[in-house]
Image: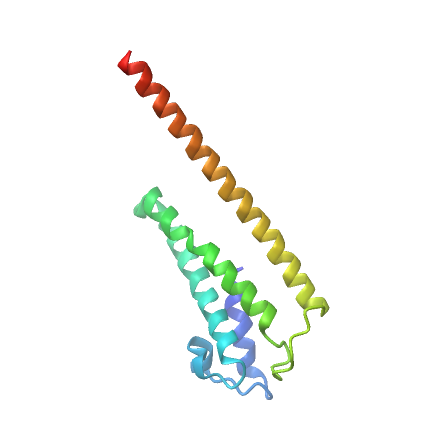
Length: 144
């Protein structure tokens, strides 16, 4: 996923119609087309890079710190889907067509990931509840 995410904007440098410069790839705030959407995409790319790099150093970082940094992926997913849904693939600034086949695929992936994120959050809350309940029972047993 990281390689694809990095190569995705690099292709724009070789397009004769896109007029993107190297600086527009790394800092797309002033890109020739859709600067806001491209900036959101760049933020998503930087989030992916952070998660991948810290994953290589998770033993040195420690589980708690690594896990805290790893939660960046949820914000990254939001930025990634935002970029994918709102960007005009032809870079012509045409109105969004939410029923375009490419957009429908991205929207379906977004719903799938959102569902998995919801299930993960629910699992974490239940796990915390079970642990808290076990701690209370342990404290009650010790006081008797």
